[in-house]
Length: 109
Picture (cartoon, rainbow, N blue to C red):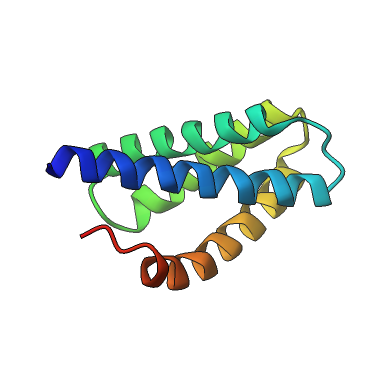
C-alpha cells in the first residue's frame, strides 16, 4: 500500500509540475508541447533526486540540483541559460505556492 501511495503522489506531482512548466514556458514564447514539459518535470525530479541522494538534504544539494535543472531546461527548450534560470525561478515560485494549497485538496495519507 505504501508504494502505491508514493507512486500516485509522484504521478500527481509530475503532472502538476508539467502543467506549471508548460504554462510558464508558453508565457516566455516557447512553442514546445506538453511532452517537453513532462520531460522537463521528469528530468528535474531525477536531477534533484540524485543531488539529494549524493549530497543529502541541504543547501548544496538544492543549489547543485537547481543548476542542473537550469542546464536541462536550457537544453530541452533550446534557450540560453539566463532565460532558463528566469523560467526556472518563476516555475519554482509558482510550484511553491501550489504546494501550499494542494495538500489541503489532495490528502494522500
